[in-house]
Amino acid sequence: MAYTTAEGRQQLLDTVAEAVDALGEALARFGVAYEELDESRGDLLEERLFSPVQKAYGRLRRCHAAFAARHGLPARSFAQPDAPAAWHGARRLVEEAADAVADADEALAELQDSLLPVEVGDPELRADLADVRALLGPLDAAADDVLRQLWR
Image 1 (spheres, one colour):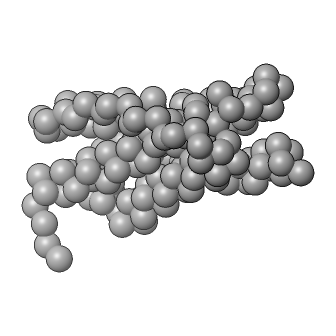
Image 2 (cartoon, rainbow, N blue to C red):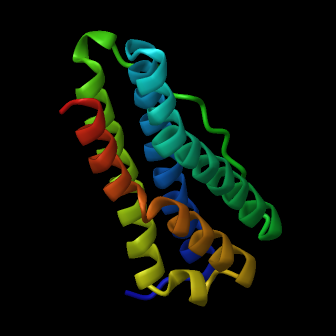
């Protein structure tokens, strides 16, 4: 399917925005789960999962804004999602958050595989995407490990 450079850039921004939204959902769930845990278990969740996702979320938001600015596209603001109800239970919230992180990573992987960042992107965008994916990559195994440690 043929597309213009402008359409390709907008598609790229939309996909990055989807990944930002997924990471925002993960952060909201990790936050509620943290509140449900005791201090030591909460600290483990924060160190292994929340902090890396928060870092990736911030980088990806900056990536989105910078790419839009460099190419004269409208910037988007990202609102923090509403916190889910705590009645889901901390374990389920962590599992849902880990799924959201995996969704974000998959969206970015598909974007990179599409070559759209090469065709209509720029070196800064490609570097930012690679950096974010490097942060997200180990989190699937980390989530499994945290779940095992917290609920054995």
